[in-house]
Image (cartoon, rainbow, N blue to C red; front, side, top):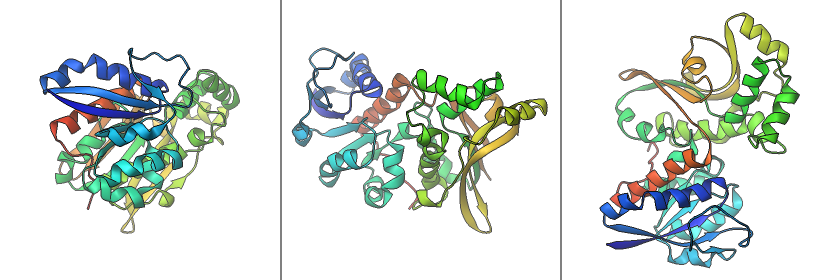
Length: 320
């Protein structure tokens, strides 16, 4: 039995569930001849009550990261996590993250580590619904042509509430009260979170250097109750859609509200869930749908990445 030392950055909802799931799946790790030892969890307040297994060391001092074989990042943000992860990456250690903003906006620094298989990030898009794994492996044999996706749960919730008769303002306030939307909610409702995720996906099927700045972004702030009701009267639904296709020989990424027929896969398969329609010449049309947010849903993908690393599978390698 070998011991694998893990460090965790952040202990919010996702971080707590990562720790709980590691303990819950300890038997699987043991079957692989591995014992997972959490060397430390970096937090802002070590005295705050948390729902985690007993004996997990919480600290505000990141020095414990030096002794970790793999680091799991669940803190969010860009500059702070990147600064904390740099030493691990530069020393050749693995990093597991769900941080789509970090991946989208700091790719110039992170790409070589991804190409070396040191970055694991299945949870960065659609959380526990596996889309990056298939796109980075078996789907490479098929000639990619187009994808459409609904990737933000906050916008999905707001637009669904508006279909029930609520104004945009009322639906947004409810989403914030339930903790679905931040305050301010610009990252979600402005379409930027979706653009981050689309950027990550594009690097597996279109261009390994696809830039976040090249995505055209329009959020749902301008969608009115009248717009939603008119779409329903036509047998359609308004969704915030991420789209990637080729226009005049160039790959185009776009995020915008679109009115889609009720029969569209993003409206039926993804009625209340994140969903993606992937099109390739050889594989045909594939539909992925499932939970795209939530603590344990996200943790399932992150701990799955940890299992891959333990087994010896490389991280998610973009197009060369």
